[in-house]
Image 1 (tube, rainbow over the protein chains, first blue to last red):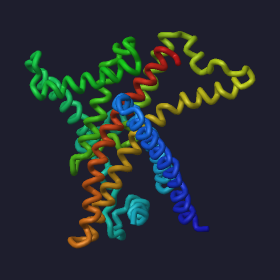
Image 2: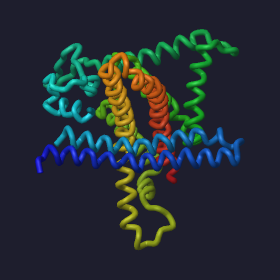
Image 3: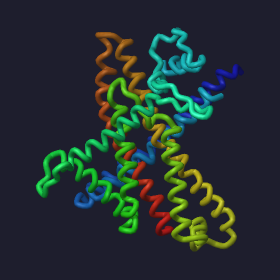
Image 4: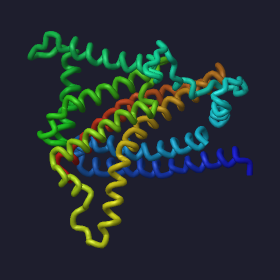
Length: 75
Length: 261
């Protein structure tokens, strides 16, 4: 196979990391809503944790992007 | 389309003019404003340095100006300054405890610096300093070194117990200690890559969709334009959120060093 084609395929495969990020973000917001609807008075106190969890989950997807960029530009 | 733009970049950052879309990576280019060479090293004053200076002076001027004649009943500007102070103070107090208030000035500086750099990056035609991994890695590496030093100064050699989880079967220990040490050592990497990747990905995406607006013209450009408006809002949220996460993770690492588990 042409090495540049393999590079593009590898970069595309690295974007599979988005699956995990999507599941993670969905889980965090879903569970937050579930908890917030059950106990609305406790919801505002956990909002900071929600944002923290969101940012941490989103970052894993971006790590995949970094891997894709490294494959594309470094090698 | 993105691939085509990247491929254009790949052809040695070559402005070969082959791609129809503008290069989304062009915005991250570092330009030397005042060339300078010290002891054989390139110490030029770049656009990155310029924006760091702007951010630092903005924060200083803002806090000094907002608190210039502070009163018990605050003016609007004073309220903003006090809000940001309280915000970070609560963050440190909640995550590190009162023992951590000694390090509040550092966390406050860090948070404001990253926040202002991220927000300055949202201004059109400006430069996003935090979209360069060397900047975020330098910040994260100093945090990591400082926190580790604090741990060793405070606990001495006992700080090594941090890597030994409690209540684990003895046979599992060799494996778990290695995992703990590796996860500790990757902290500066994950801390820096998180901020850098978020800023770079966001700004690349903004540029790519901005190019779509132009490419689709007056009739079709409205759809990506609407997306751009929404996405700019999300980017401003991310700019704040990443500064917050950077500061709060610093607090969590500091808490680990001060209180160990």
